[in-house]
Length: 199
Image (cartoon, rainbow, N blue to C red; front, side, top):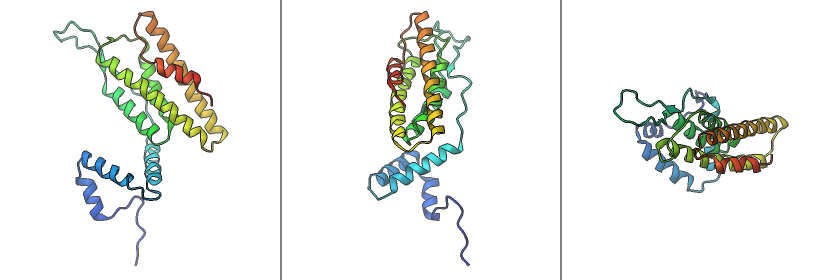
């Protein structure tokens, strides 16, 4: 008697490959598959990615900057990018890369908001991470534009506008704060992009 296969079932030999392959191997395999132009394969990949991401709601990180080590012999009081900051950027890239542009704004907004009340070296690791975040926001907004072109309900439009407004407020607050200590505002591109965005 044929039994119903559980959701997500794969061939046993294929599952053996997945379990034992390195991350680098899996990336190469996926890229080769997606480049094969097999009908429907890319759409299925994006759909599966979105389903996986939607299973785990975003939790705002407690901190995105590390605190200077008071026991260190270094004279620098420069904070560093915490693992949560880099994780927030990875999460955002997964979301906007799979077509969930508006959902990607939440982790990016948390990064922007975390800069308020903080200072950093213009040439330090934090500045480098924030430059990446600026570029990510621009890409996320492009993903939002693509998302808008699809069929959306009024509820989705309102949620998207709320996410955009929240990001815009965080960017402006960060700009004002950075200007107070005469720092270099790291989100210029993002600020102009969100101001130009029309939903």
